[in-house]
Length: 112
Image (tube, rainbow, N blue to C red; front, top):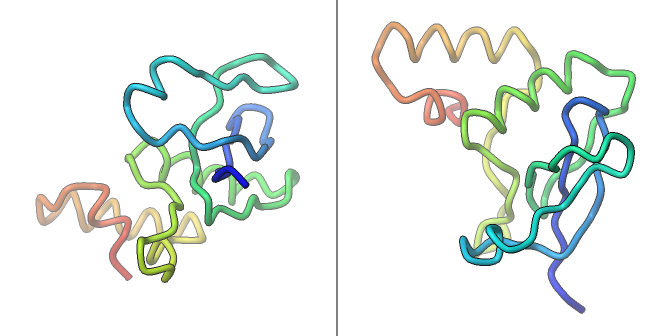
């Protein structure tokens, strides 16, 4: 069975599973589209679980994480993607920490 990952449309708050395009040459040649709005989907990873569509705050958190370059791919040892903030308060705290200390945003967001 081919490896499948979740792709999301942040505008429609939709998640779909598709064959993974993790290598750069495959990503350039194949772009998945949202079944609702036809915009490009964003790779979220194989360990991603979509929040309920009505949970706007959770989707805002997800948007920050994906735009910072974090995803939800399973680690090679099968231990998961690591820590990810789940609330807007946690995201704000980590963004403030990154601003104060100069730590890269992606690293600050992935720190428990």
